[in-house]
Each structure stands twice: as structure tokens, then as C-alpha cells.
Length: 136
Image (cartoon, rainbow, N blue to C red; front, side, top):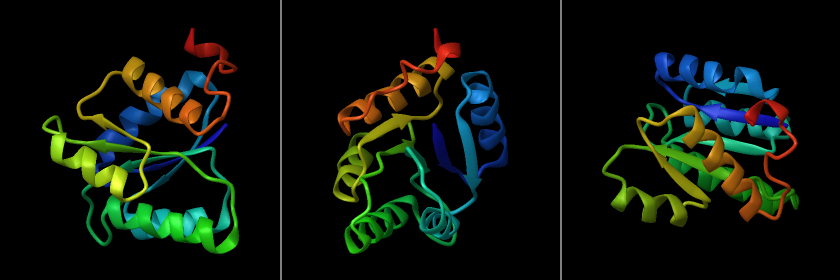
């Protein structure tokens, strides 16, 4: 499984990397929405973790552009899990309007991250993460 993680906070990028290190998931990182769109255009990902608020381009705008790339090139749908603040009610609606599949409030545990990833993969009619042995 290949994942794109888009997060401008270097500490959180490192934490996510550590949380997923034992899962066997191959993670690429981008630091803003523009880098995310560029990475998406040249690589295939099973899912995207997307911070909502970043410099250069927000996660919401990046998700909209990723959906346009998918539509314009008839690509397979890639689930997007947004990472947002704990007061996420308004953000949840915005994330779904931008083409997101879920919202994981910060801070989160590795179990919550893996569970949320599994959920968005399953909602996109994929097999989820049951094949990732280190999750059990």
C-alpha cells in the first residue's frame, strides 16, 4: 500500500511516519497542497492523508484539484482522509464538500489513524488494511 501524507508540521510528519513505520505502508510526504497535487500527478496512491490548513495551498484546495485530475484523466478514485483540529464540526462539512472521505481530528493515536485509514479505504470499495500484518 502506498500513501501520500500532506502535512506542513515537521513534528507531526515525523509522528505519522513513526506511527506507520511497523505497518509496511509506503509513505511519501508533501509539505503543502501544491506539493501534494504535484506528487499525485506523477505517482499512484492508495490513499491521501491531508492536513486542512497549510501555507501555499490549503488541503481543501488540493483535494479539489486532485479530484479534477482524477476526473480529467479518468483515474481511479483515491480516498482522502483529512487531518483537522479537534473542533472539527465545521471542518467536516468543508472536507466532504472538497472531495474528502473522512476527517481525523488532531491530536490522534496510531490506532485512530489506522482505523480512520481503514475506514476510508473500505468506503471507497477497497479491501481496507486487513492485509497489513503489523496492525494486529
